[in-house]
Picture 1 (cartoon, rainbow over the protein chains, first blue to last red):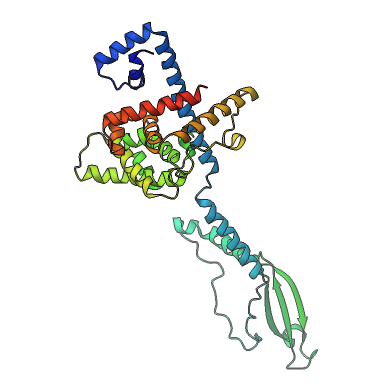
Picture 2 (picture 1 turned 30 degrees about the vertical axis):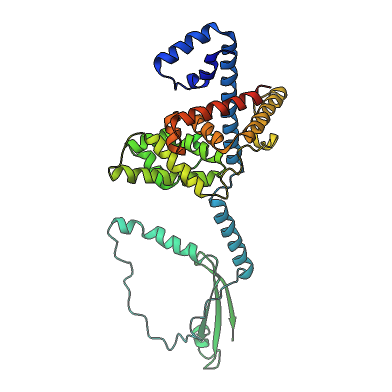
Length: 184
Length: 179
């Protein structure tokens, strides 16, 4: 083995001064043993690089995303809440114990037709807003209880005075009357 | 690992979007730094934290008018010291034999190529285990593109000592890898 062989790695790494590097280069062109060594060093370097890349790729595959624990915690919390508080039907309170329409003051006179709104940006959102509220109310069944005097339903004298009927009105999500049940 | 496979945390995204010298260094050195740190044994997340801290330190260093020569060596030195502080994971994995199918899948390789490639990596892993700590670190920093002088600055060694260490480590590696 020749003396230059000791400088081959530094030469490959570009760490030799220019004149020394030129001398090594000329020698390698002539010396078969040194060329063989250079090839072996290059291959070892490439294998080392490949190993480093493989280590990094393996680590990336092993890696659990940072948001995974947060997601897992959220899912568990949601499951616990759903199990602990199953969906219950909310019954809205009845509108007063009974409303006697006979005792209610006459409604104030309202204009037959509301004044037309000005076309503003805000006004443009009015209709969707109402729809949103209807949508919000959809899960609930609305029940209204209305007291109706018998004399308002039957001709005078057909029923004794002082008798009222209770109308249980169920309102559909779209606002229409779904069911009316009369009871005394 | 591709550049995109490691998600960027917010401060690094700001760095990547900027146009300063720090940004240039970030684009150039982020991947070599990550690879160096992962090879030292840090997890991918730990390595990203260290790289982020190193670049934040670099920004402070430059803003305070610190010496701006050899920033590459400076960054590797900061990252290296931070990795050292994480003693639990330092050198945890480097030199381990990779688990063939799990750690080194090769999509396009034929079964024969796959066997040869895995055998080559198995041999280099065995050779790495025979290296001393400073030999490993020198080779890793060399693989990160650092000059001997820069490696010496990172590891606190004289340049001539780095040359000798790299030479010795490469001979061991070559002997074991090219059997």
